[in-house]
Amino acid sequence: MKNYDQITEEIRKIAKKILNDKTVDKVIGFGLGTINQEITPLFISKAEGAKKLVFNKNSHMSLAKYLLNYKNEDVAIVAKPCDSRAINTYLSEKIINRNDIKVIGIQGCPGIEGNTACLECEVRNAVISDYDVGEKISKKKTNQLKEEKDFDSLSPEERFKYFRNEFERCTRCYACREACYVCYCKECFTESNQPEWLNKSVSLNENFTYHLMRAMHMAGRCVNCGACELACPEGIDVRALAAKMYNTATEIFDYKVGMDQKQKTLLAEYDVHDSEKGFME
Ligand code: SF4
Ligand code: SF4
Ligand code: SF4
Image (cartoon, rainbow, N blue to C red):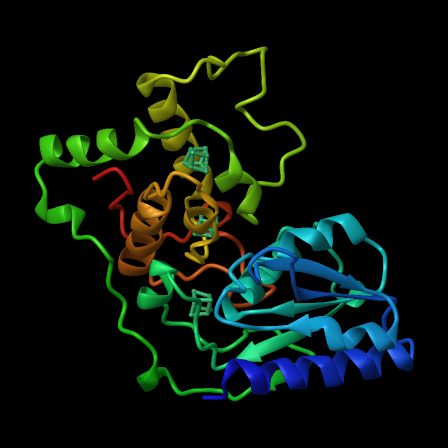
């Protein structure tokens, strides 16, 4: 597995080349912010700017969502394997065109510091890539599928207590929603006032409604990247519900979202041989 510095060098080299020869007009990648070496999205249009691109242990955000700002433009994007699955899902949902994008796919992802999703990650090679960086690793070297927390062993009361403790700290700043590639609706249900799904006030009941409704929207689409959890300023276990459904879909339907650009999302396809067991059982 290549390290962050090696991957950074490879990203810079490719970005410089494809900007120089005008294969793309823009490269979307990670760069260093101004405070404490924080990582920020970087948009490079000139070849000499390629040296500003980095990939390090803090490159946690999913950049895929920025593709939606550059529809019908020739752009390249740096994609961790989880982000490459997000890109495939956009392609499958036909909201971006394959011909418009070039993917600089990270192979053998070394993971992100503090991201609990990386401990569960079993897809460490980019599944769509025009330019590979890093080095592919075999499935044997990836983590085994396991959930960080075993909610099945808890009683309903214990589960409720766990999520109550988490969600009562939620201020509904929606940073988790903004960080998630799945959440691209122009008008989120949280902002709708006709019907009003969610009261604007922050209370435990409304917070539960937000998190449960959001989890339903994630079913079969969450790639278990952990970006939502890392974005939360309150340290809330935001990923738990989506990750549970992610793992349930794998167990029941042998389904992993975004592995192929032609693959439909789970709820967009029905197979008569599917088990009848549902998410709510
Ligand atoms: S979830 Fe997997 S692919 Fe995504 S950053 Fe972590 S290790 Fe890499
Ligand atoms: S980022 Fe955290 S505090 Fe903000 S809405 Fe999401 S869970 Fe709540
Ligand atoms: S809900 Fe899933 S896809 Fe969205 S940010 Fe969280 S882990 Fe990633």
